[in-house]
Image 1 (cartoon, rainbow, N blue to C red):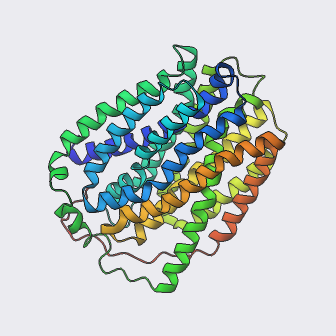
Image 2: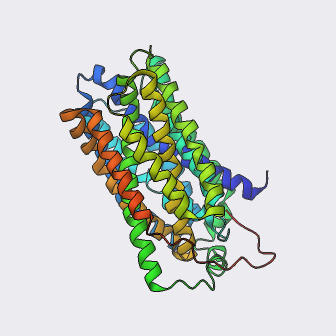
Length: 408
């Protein structure tokens, strides 16, 4: 494996760990802490909010620091800081302590998306759909693995290990990453990043009206998509726990089913990635939004195998949609500012995500999950309407010069 391939692989592993560690608490709260701490799921869900607030607000400064210091350096900080904060969260003895731990974890977790995605598309030209999609699959396997890992350790040793073990792995990877990328980190704002500014976007002319139109659609759909994504990924373990009582026998089985739903659904991103470069973002976005609108609307009142099948279908749409906004930003943003643009996008997305946690708890406490599915179906329909305003064809970008190697 070449050094470039190792770098891409570590960036993908970073995405996996980012989503795994930030969602472990969802299953821990739903299955273990409701019994251990004698609290309801709605009460416990609120203590995840500080972590997602940090996940949101620290994305922009992370991108700003990376563009001015070193993207590779910030990735090393991400891996090591994430691992240490996971271990500290495992020491929590009360809801307040776990909220503090999740807040610190969220600070470091916020680094990944603006910095990791900027590194991933750096120097790769306009055809980035599959690269982003593969990275997205790693992230969503992390989403599914959170339920699997938490369920396994709840049954075998205790929920605290669900934080400690991924944390130790992250620290080890961070040390190796820092060693492998030591030259780039030492160069700080490297010449390679500056040079890339002349490769990815040189000569691209996009008129102001198109930029404003695309920006408005990206921001709107990113915000609504974040509500859908957070609602499905955070609440799905509890949804399955309620709707599959006739199937489930243990926390481990719940973890496996959630893992399979998340992991298989995430493969939709590979189809999305290939389709983006071939058919364009407008057509792909329409299909993903339509699938979600239909299957969220079918979910109320379902239990057992029908509920599992419909949940799998709406997760296909939710996960398949994930790479599209990042693809659009990668096409529009100048390379030297790309980490900051991704940071701004994720501040918006994760702000919505942080608000969605108490929103989920409120809806669940008052009406149950059926009302949530109706709301999510309406949100998907709003995305569908917005996406019809996308241009049928994206502006072409200048290709990389002949002989210029792509970099991670």
